[in-house]
Amino acid sequence: MSTPPEPEPTVIAGERRHLTDLAYRLLGSLTEAEDAVQEAYARWYAMEPRQRAAVRVPGAWLTTVISRICLDVLGSARVRRERYVGAWLPEPLPDRTEWPRASHGTADPADRVTADDSVHMAFLVVLESMTPAERVAFILHDVFRYPFPEIAGILGRTPAACRQLASAARRRVGPDRVPAASVPEQTALLRRFKAAWESGDIAALVGLLDPGATMVADGGGLASTVRHPVRGSADIAAQLARIGRLSPGLTLLERTVNGRPGLVAQRDGVTVTVAAFQLAGGRVTRIWAVRNPEKLRPWAGPPGP
Image 1 (tube, rainbow, N blue to C red):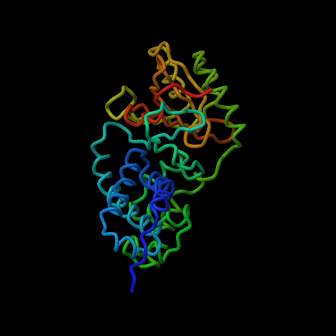
Image 2 (tube, helix red, strand yellow):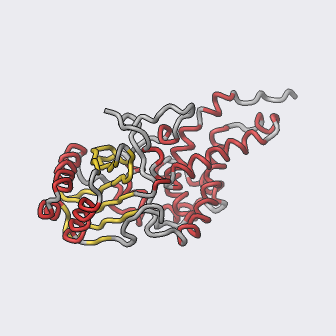
Image 3 (tube, rainbow, N blue to C red):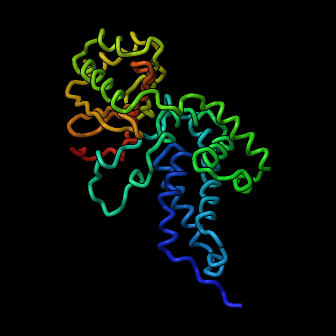
């Protein structure tokens, strides 16, 4: 019996966007997602040609492998994040049409992530509260529509157990997955918020913030920031005004962050903060400010027009 031919390299390479999409949602990190994708491909090409030829559906094989890689990363990440300085937030995702990267010969992983409701910062933050197995089962089933028997093979559990994992994860997500306002409404609100912040108008900021709003900042010990959540409209407004006074020369830009309107702060053309927002009832309810420079690499270089 003749040996079946190996899958074409273009077929294998064509899985990269799907794998990066999946890994970013599972890990909340572009850097770790790209590392996971590279590891999955390394395992594919480490097999003998006859072994690769025997794989009936290469995409399914790669999905299984990267899911297991991410499961291992999530397990070790919990230990690393216990040692993390201050709050840990997912890496913010730029819109490639707004933030063209300087040419460096390779595509940035952000260019291979499809933006939808499952990459919004509010959603990714909730995912952090899940166990690794819950997160994998939920993302594979609810976001990528994989059936539970296939997920069972990836996780090494029964389909019924995987269904329970996804159900538990779904209860954690609650309403955070549902956009609270249309994009034009969000853009208009953040434009007013930006103007109030730039002018140091504390009263206007308080009026735009929900009384129970929360602001969380991630500096990772590499950038100065508050290490604990700031709660309440008055305290957040005061903190933002203080940042404005202590950081002269900041330029605020309206940019898309993880598929929704957000703000980017630059100093001398260098991105120093990327802020994502959750809005409801015509007010800002949550702010996530990422200042860790290691998480801002996709935002390097000048923004687009």
